[in-house]
Length: 407
Image (cartoon, one colour):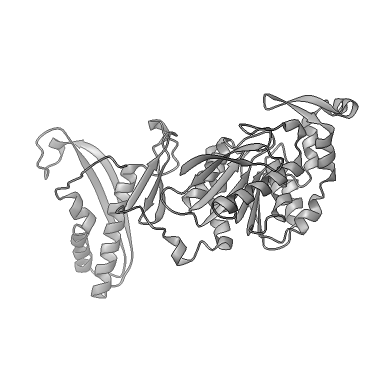
């Protein structure tokens, strides 16, 4: 994804720091607003992975630091659940004015409660996603421990959360107590996806049950097996983003043919982008999003196939499609083609048919499985045709690759 650092005025007039994540090389089919967890920020790793999964499906994502958090101005001590919801409404107004009105709201933990509160105030929203969200935000009070008594007596207290110290005032607790979450959820009247980890020891899974029961249809539930509250494992946050992106597209019109394949930049069939992370790489191949990476052993994060895996996939796909086309033209009873491929480096002297006398060469082993009532002559002919697929012929021909700097 490509990102822009931006800012906009929050509900109270403070300047809020934001990040707009966009698809690699296409116009978003929709925009989402992401609300982070209590005392977290827009740059949380889980938020980054969820955003990456969404932008991979051509959904732009605006995530920002709530008032008084991260790089945003203002005093955190003066904020509460209601002000967070108001900041979301301000963010929606900014998106509508500068880009396009948000169609999706996504909230993590207390951010989930905030998006439920804000959804009814943002007319453009067509779908809402909560992640490990509380059904009753008063549960946050438990995180304050013994500071509750001091807040009650003095009106405020210093509280350490996740290694950072915050000032919590009585108004924050009063606002939580006044939040009518059940009525808010019941009157949401928007498609809702409830995502929750059964092992969440911060916000118990019973909260998900309460939210789901209060909500009206259409509603869906996603169990985040083995995940923790903060989705600290990349696999979990990427899973949430991938499923959420697939789910919301039903409601934002992303399945129409005209939206399925965005225009490419001038003259490019394939656009590839790798950022500073090691080494998730986004690919837009003729309008279709793909992902590549390196294995953990090579310093990557193993979120996608390696470049060589994609090379083998190209050859395998070309082989399979070519055999399918040939059998169809002949009217042969070929039910399916399965191609198994492996790549390795071998010494030239180990290859009898190779021209190189020394050094190492690339070897691709390809096994073709033909399913159907074919006779032996048909099977042998299809084996010969496998070597005639266009990608196979390209790999065996002279290739010219011209590289230049762009921009």
